[in-house]
Length: 111
Length: 114
Image 1 (tube, each protein chain N blue to C red):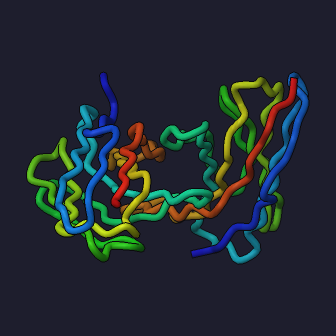
Image 2 (cartoon, each protein chain N blue to C red; image 1 turned 120 degrees about the horizontal axis):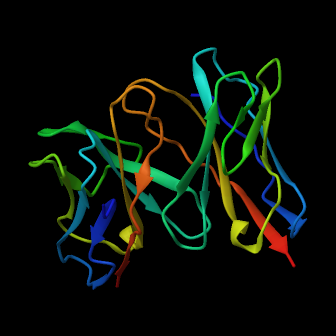
């Protein structure tokens, strides 16, 4: 399974776009990029996933580079409720999908 | 729908005691998972199940047993608790349906072993 590298922490001002990077240089052709977040001590929450095209949903946008070795999660208008630990995970989409969580990025949204 | 629920929310055990954590989901999901999260760390997979009556080992299975007798329930057992098993335990579930890719997580069980 491809490993991911994320910065341990980031800060962002409320109302601004939060851009969270993730490196996955050993990603295989059939592996997807998933993003989850964990607010305080709650269970993780799915945000978005993608293979090679950019993706957008009601929560965020996911930008994957053309060589697929890195990606960026974008929260377009961050709010205080977006303060959380964000996990970038690379997995194949078939089968049991055993997620491997690293230490993630602790994003703090400042008022 | 209640989603994924976990029982109990908190528990304190003494070393050597046993207990069972219950995970229940009402979404008719085929896949279910047990993770543990230690302070400052990401989640690690303990055991998982791809369907009723089947279980498999994850990344850190030692000291735990699981059972999936009913599709909606996934039980995690600690036969002889150790202080190293102090952690927050999360259960998750997921459908096998194509086009659905997210795991749904429960609120967690905070376990302390003294």
